[in-house]
Structure formats: C-alpha cells, structure tokens
Length: 154
Image (cartoon, rainbow, N blue to C red):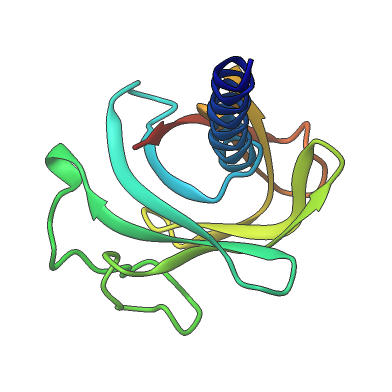
C-alpha cells in the first residue's frame, strides 16, 4: 500500500511539473515579448529580427537585432529619420515604443519605418497561439495603414 501511495505521489509531482512548464510556455506566447522575424508586406521576404521587451512599466518596446538577406548591413543608417535617430545605425535602434496592453491587443505606441524615417501609430495582436504577431502601422485611424505578420523565433 505504501508503494502505491509513493507511485501516485510521484505521478502527481510529474503532472504538476508538466503543468507548470506548459503554463510558462503559454505565458510567453500570450505576450509579444520575445524575438520576431519580420516579413516584408510587399515582397513577402524576411527582413529583420526584432527583440520586443517589457520595459517594466507596463509598456513594450522593440529594437532591431539584425537585418536579414539584403537588409543585413551592420553599417546601415536611418538617413531618412527626422528625430534623434537621424543617421543612427539601424542595428540596435529602438523602432517600437510605448505599446500597452489593451484587451487582446497592444496599442498606444509608435513604430518607426527605418526605410522612410516615418513614425506611425501602432497596434499589435497575436495569432496562431502566440507564434505570429500582426503589426499594424497607421496614420490617424487603423483603417489607413498597413500590416505585417511577424514570426516568433525560438
């Protein structure tokens, strides 16, 4: 009888461990925090790797880790930027700022397009169990903009 209780306790402990591991994976997938591969909405090709972080104040920010393919130029600069990022290296540049959770989306922030130097309002939503991030940049209202789907990287 004691062996039976011992085996049952071991099974419960293993089950609890699996549940905690799954909960941790779900928690990461339920937020945009992580590393993402951007997909160009015009060409459909991978463009860059972006790291999104929680700034600790309930806001998310994202920076360029590196370019991909023809965009992988470590010395590439934001020559079209008009703010403090003018002529700064794109690699390491913060391009997403001020994103706050709003229900199932993250809104209220801005995204910079380093290609044209323009700032856009931004909205982000997760899809496919947190493996895809739809990033919409727009001017004025969300209907007037464009979206990219980014892929979560491990």
